[in-house]
Image 1 (cartoon, rainbow, N blue to C red):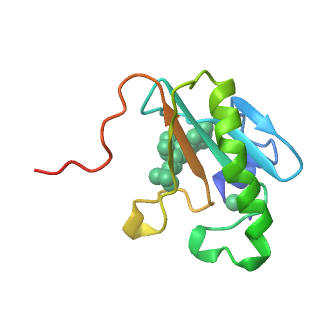
Image 2 (image 1 turned 180 degrees about the vertical axis):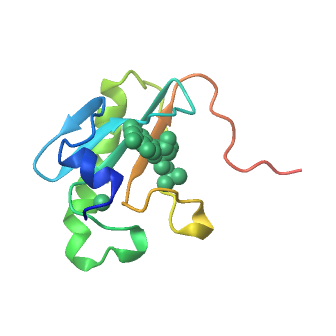
Length: 115
Ligand code: 5GP
Ligand code: ZN
């Protein structure tokens, strides 16, 4: 996708602070982190969101999920992490190239506050 910022990062046209790369997956630090460790995992294949993923992507998505704890540990998150996939406008997604946020370190509050 020509105008997709994460495709540009995957192609090396926009620099990133790389965490991990193989032929199918790239992980890089978020430019605007919400916690001491905050990186994103993306498939190099352009999928706009989880909604656009299908059965053909089962192995790719499974691989990414299984990679998350390994990369989190390598980034120093020994006690766990939060993985978030914002999906669509209703899910607060801003960059429409599927990505998994991996967030941790410091105090991670409960995700949903109940009053
Ligand atoms: P979303 O809200 O779509 O789930 O998350 C998009 C994320 O991408 C945001 O956390 C934002 O900080 C990050 N982001 C947007 N543009 C760039 C960029 O050019 N480089 C990096 N490393 N992160 C970006
Ligand atoms: Zn893309």
